[in-house]
Image (cartoon, rainbow, N blue to C red):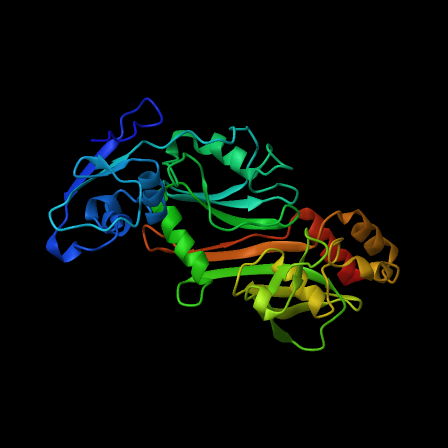
Length: 340
């Protein structure tokens, strides 16, 4: 017999043991385990089960089974060891957060512009995740096997506004389903306020254009042919107009990287302050009154704010709706454009 791999930390693993019933004969090991009520109740995802199997933590008849697709026979004794959550890799950092709502399962943050959501090679510290690990402490319960906050959607570094984060595996699974559905069949609302150059000639519209990596500038996204892009749909409505600019309300039907920024530029109305997708509109600044021109030149980021976030609580089922006022820099921009 081959011994199952030991847990990766000092705390003991929790062992689950099952006997394969005739109706499950011929099924995959990972699927069988994922369907067991005890494992469902422990909020262990199928992807994590697959990883545990590959790590040597599953056994059939007392012998290690490392193939998630291993076929089972009636009467097989199946065991799975689930280790306790490992400590989060990103370090906890004491960073002030504007927490709009928090309970045992999730929290809603009003993120300021300039704060990166997740650590990466260019931003290994000083991120929202670092701050959340410090804030939540022991209340984090092992999202994906690691004590870390569950990021189910992101906001660009230089976009401000509302963001929901899971604290538990159960909340993470529920919120992930919501955001994968994009509000088509499940209750989810995401509305952004976007200050754009030019005034659309219609009251509202929809941009349905697939997005993918730019062919030559890999850090940028672009509207691309359907064959090499992902579906991207943005609904917009004109809220205010200022002669050379306008304020739009944008609702996402999908959640692609830089979606609103690319879609608005695609229809000829790039975001004010967007150096990546609106650089060709610098001449518009010269048409502004001095006060408005100074605010735009000092803005230092795209004029985009995640103003409304609504969803069904993944644990309680409660309908939740949050709204965020424009931050000071965009409120000043709005006032300057309106008075120009």
